[in-house]
Amino acid sequence: MLRRAAPTTAALCRRALSATPSSSRTAAATAAASSSAVNSILLRSLKEHYLEVCKMTPPPKVSPPEPFTIVKGALDQPSGPVLRREYGDDGEEISISVARLANILPAGADSDSDGAGEGGGMSASISQLFLHVDISKPGSGKSMQFLCGLYPDALGIHSVCLRSKNAESLNGDMTSKGGGEYRGRIFQELDEKVRDALHLYIEARGINEKLFRFLQAWLYVKDHRNLIRWFKSVGSAISEPKPKCQEPHAGE
Figure 1 (cartoon, helix red, strand yellow):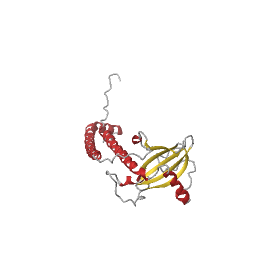
Figure 2: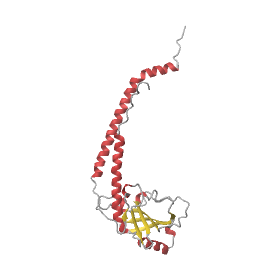
Figure 3: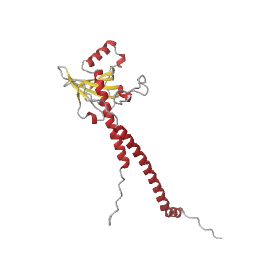
Figure 4: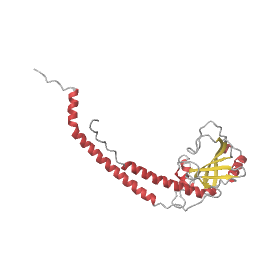
């Protein structure tokens, strides 16, 4: 008795391929419909939050204390100096960068915060700021750099170091410890008289709590702009139509 030969692997593949188009088209259509529904939900949510952000009350317009001036284009840069000024007969160049203290300290490190924002809907995290102060003399290859905590009624120095001007900027990571230069002792390990003298040094140059109101408002506006841009960018990326494949021309 003859036994029918089992189908070969190639034959099974041909059968599977011949039966596939209809089922695969159905699955593709289902997946496309599901994806479209999810996209619609996400776009609707993004739009709702975008409109909420647009309705936020901006803080009152505040000017920086004289003689500080705002760095042109600082609001549109991801990082970098916000304020500049010159000081003394030597024409010292002073620049100030700012960030939220909450973005620098580890979670829970600022747990003593009163938890209440100030004015114009600004969150509590903008009531504690982190400054990077750069002080240098014209023609000098070095600059004094201070990392400070700034509050509505006080300023405290976290660290101070002398760095080469051509060294990698601290703006990208204000707590960076990279590089081969000696950074000096931990600030709290310095003699109390030295710490007090360094506080007087930066206060004489206008680095004090009077900067707080302007820098707080500036950060709020910057965060607001960045958030609006983010909503727009994400919405555009989701709703962007996929490019259609062009039919090949004859002879291609």
